[in-house]
Every structure is written in C-alpha cells, then in structure tokens.
Image 1 (cartoon, helix red, strand yellow):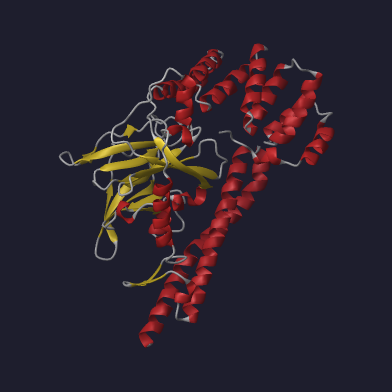
Image 2 (cartoon, rainbow, N blue to C red):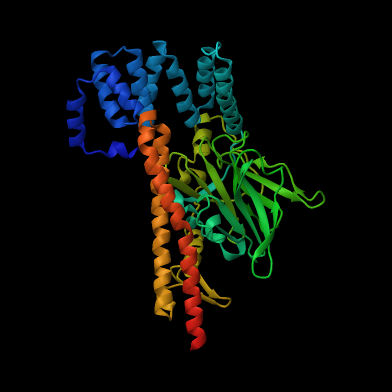
Length: 478
C-alpha cells in the first residue's frame, strides 16, 4: 500500500502551468514553499533547482523530503540517499523516518544512530532521538514475532464515524462513541464506550485532569448507570487509554494506548481481570500484524461468528482509517520464514489475500455478518427513546407535528456541530504548523468557532427533551 496525497491528483494542465511559473524559482523560494506545506508546488520548484544544480545537497534533501510527504517513497529514498552522500545530516533523520514507516527497522536504526552521533553537543536532543532508536529496535523485535492471521476483509472509512463499520452480533455487546452513549455532545468524538450484551455494564473513556484519557466502568442501576470505577493503574497510565472491548468471559479486556511500549501512536493491548487480586493484570501488546508504526485501535471479537475487527490508519489519509476483519486464532502462531520481505508484507497486511490458504473462501461468512447487521439497521434511521417500551426509528413514527419538528431541529443542530468541529480541527492543525504572525490572524477565527460551538452544544439535548415531552403528552391525550 502507498499513501497517495490528494495533491498528486491535480490536473495535468495545472502542473504544466505550475512548472512554467516556478521554473525560475531559487532554492530559498522552493524551501519556503516546503515550509508552508505546499508540497506539490515545492516539488515542481525543487525540480527546477535540481536541473540547474543536480549535486546540491540541500536541493536533494528537500526534494527527497517533499516526495516523502507526497507519498512517493521510492523517489524520496533515492534523493535522500544522494543528500546523505553530500553530508546533509537532516537527510539521515528523514531516511530513518521513511525506513521506520516502511517496516525497514534495521535501516531506520542505522540512520537514526548516524544522525544522533551528530548531536553529541546537545544532550537533550541526543536523548530525544534515542527514543526514535528505541522505537525502531522495538519494531525489529516485533517483526520477529509476526502472528499468522487470516484477514478476510478490509474497508476504508471516515475516521469520524469508524465505529459504524463494526458489524458485531448482538451477543458481542455494542461499541459506540462515548458522547453518543452518554448523550454528551461536548466530549471527545474519538472517546469510545463498550456496553455488554445484557446492558448491565459500560466501560468507557473519560478525560481526566492528570492522566489524559483513562478507562472507567459503570454498572446499570434502575434507570441509569452509576458506581463509577477507575480500571486501575495496571491499565491507566500517564498516557492515553481508549477503545475498550470486553470479551464474553467478562475478564478479557482489549484496549488501545499510546504508552511508551507502543510502537506507533496507539497500539492494541490485552489484559485479564484477576478475580483473586481484584485488579487487571499487566497488559500485553498484541504485536504485529495488529499493531504497526501507525495508530491501531478498537479490537473487537465477535465470538458468535468467530471473527474479529480492528482499525488502523496505516498508509491512510489523515481523515480515513482502514477496518480489518480477521479470524481470531485459538493459539498464537508465529510466521516462520527466512524471507524478510514476506514477513514485512504480512506485518503490513500488504494484501489480505496473501494471508489465506489455497481454496479459502470467506464469502458466506462475510455475507452472514453483513446481512445480519442489515436486518438490524433496516429498523430505521435513528434510535429515539420516547418511553420505556416505545422507540422511534423513522420520522413518520412521530404522531405529534410539534414533536417531529423539534426532533428535526435537534438533528440539524447536531449535524451543524459535527461540521463546525471538523472545521475547528482543521484550523487547529493549520494553526499548529503556522508561523507566529499567521497564528495571530487565525486565533480570532478559532476563538469564534469555539464560542459558536459552546453555544450550540446544549441545544440538541434540550430540543430532544422537548420533543419527547410533546410526543408523550400527545399520546397520553389520545
């Protein structure tokens, strides 16, 4: 798989125009385009510079780094290597990153160590890059123990609603966003909640003051959830913990964390509850191919159908994730091969068909999984609890016109909130990369959006409550 930037899809006519426009650019001007994140324009500008000065170390480095950003890693490697031979030390670091993300961990370690050796006069930076070396060493060790797993399906979905792609049977419980389950629109959109099959317990992610995201549980009381319990220090760390899933045995818990022992951002971990000690055991990293140099999370096992699910943003654009469906092993089987590239491809999940045995066919199983979910989804467009034994799934279910209008208004505001949140996230990302003068210009827009969102967050809940009350009053009169 290769990350393909949307910039590579620009029309040819535009690129021709761009090439003519930038043909006279200097190295300084091309570097400024790179610093601004205008990588497609920077690429054309650096090509112009290299035509005149093919041996220029900086031009080779920046052209390689630009192609790395654009996803053309083969071209990036070629020019970065040229820059290294011309004693550009930054090229060592970028090559290390390229090799790390390509699962070429030996080469990543070599380049990181060479770059680190240039920083001996700066102990703080030396220690920082030691962490990169340690991660690459971790990758080397994980690559020696890649589990043989049959991946039977994959799909690329929007990150904002990735949990919708999990087609679990009812016996497996439910996974959904925290803010949806607890009806709190102002919470982290990526915070997850898991509800057991019987609905008697929920395990969820909550933001804490000291530890970032931690895992908690609540038990079902009469008509609400209470008895909040922190899952303990064996699970919760000073890093983020999220995406819980409890197996039917009630003791085996999967979750994701970006703690020090993770290879990428989030890695998937598994732990078990020790009934005697009344605490969870030290979590274990589930390893490759489930984990990668990227973010991997939300492992869920459907024991009824004998399938598992997990999400990853490996080789994906920023707003997308790939969901993998796999057959869980009863015992962990390690891939034994002298072919390092084969192991690397299995760890990457380069092609899901490569994980199958000759004659394997999972069409019937996949049809069963997806058809069972379609039956459930056919019930309607939403779930709106009017009363204990009365649930609406479609707008025509409303009997009262006012209640229906209030509900539609609440839905519209929810949709507006989602759009504004995406806009705010994009602005914050742009702000983090901007220079000081541009940050000053952007800060007012960010603050304006934040105020607008804060004013909107309470409105849907109030409208849903009014719609419910109107509908109940109307039904009672009838």
